Length: 329
Image (cartoon, rainbow, N blue to C red; front, side, top):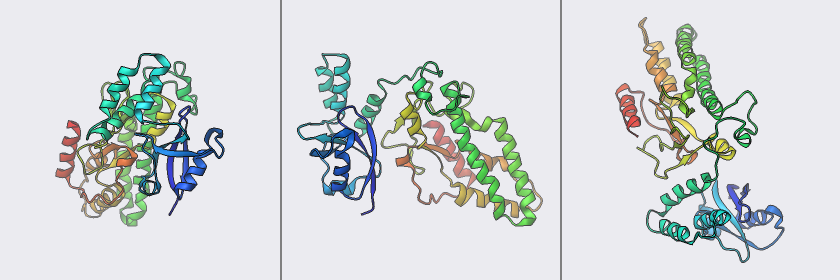
């Protein structure tokens, strides 16, 4: 089978590694070498519950699954072990909390609870409240020196995504008949002027924004809004890229997904509108909302980014219904 990419944690120290393997034996060989373990016998378990991964389980693993490598004699009870390790660092009386965590991880809702608990564990030691480079130098590692605060960098991150969408719109002029390209370019220039006034809607990622709608809490928490055709995220994905460097980098894999698709629907419809306008003005701001705003954009975890054909038409009534739904979420 084709090589499958997974994330593997070492039980001691908790460091995470990206590995790719086409079979379980191959993955075990690579995992056994982590952190100088050499050829020591080891086994692989699911990170969330410690369940051992066999050959059938390996084939069923989703891309980017999270596993833990365990030397002979070591056990892992999933997030319960993670909590225990964390608490033992700060307290000697953690048994009561461990028992409570075990209760949380039992029953039908365990997968969703595991997700919430994992997010909590990941962020217990984060420096979320810090904002400046001086307060959290590690967060800014690899970030250009011109960014002095986390919010300014996160705003820039959102602006970059929107700028990318604008470039795609401008490039689409090549698909328009030459006689209509001037009209199409006039519309894209109007969109660009509006984007510049709005500073490329960077406020969506800026936790310090007070006047315009931000997609995160004042503390910087973002929640996945689920696939394009669902009301919400069934996995309860959440992340705080303001917390630490790893979360900041991981957040770059989250997508601002167009519910009504940009390339398959919106741009062809705009080109068709230019072709059939018969001298009338085109409501370019309608297309602007579809392309660059949360009227038609959903923030989604990479797992929830459904790349199949959306089968949503560029219909005004439909998009307004979508917008109403998003504001309720």
